Length: 98
Figure 1: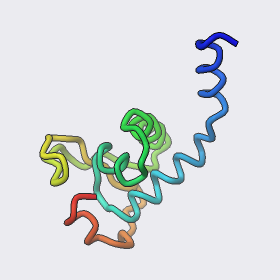
Figure 2 (figure 1 turned 180 degrees about the vertical axis):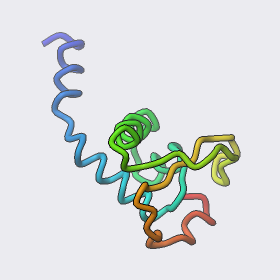
Figure 3 (figure 1 turned 90 degrees about the vertical axis):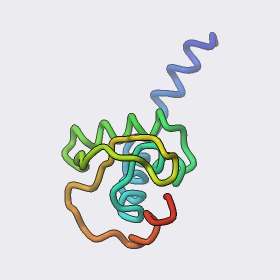
């Protein structure tokens, strides 16, 4: 099987709903977070986190908060939160850069 077909097959075999749930769980723990923070917390690629967060935004599950510097990376990033805006389980995690 050529590489291109293998990549396409791997893409279609991913369980996006599971990854979306993991992103939602991460945002519940982390509170307002940027893509890099969610990716680091879940130990996934930033591009994967960005894609799932984009899907969740279109589904109305997460909303844009603002742009600011990340405590963890020091880079100005877009911050997101759950649309349901429930209290995070561990709001202190944000203080430590997750």
